[in-house]
Length: 126
Image (cartoon, rainbow, N blue to C red):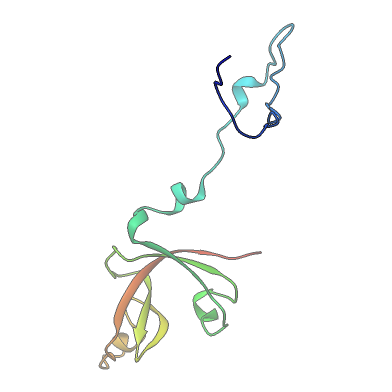
């Protein structure tokens, strides 16, 4: 007699498979109304590699309709152009800024800042 395999005795793993019901009769008239689910990242994100999500912890940006616990979707590949709002870094702190800058409207000199990214969407709970 030959030994083919040796070792501990193993229990068979239970096989759980989703059962598919067999269709009987006529198909449902609503099957053509089935829609695919909505993927928000496909809808809201244009450049996946340059997009970041930032959750807001304070209430200092309420003038921009950005509130505590809102999520900003920021695209770092976009240019800061007229009509856009951006997250910038001034003196080591994050700030939200609209273009054209408020101080530019008054023809004052703008403080230097680093553009972190353009805010494309703000998600907040109603």
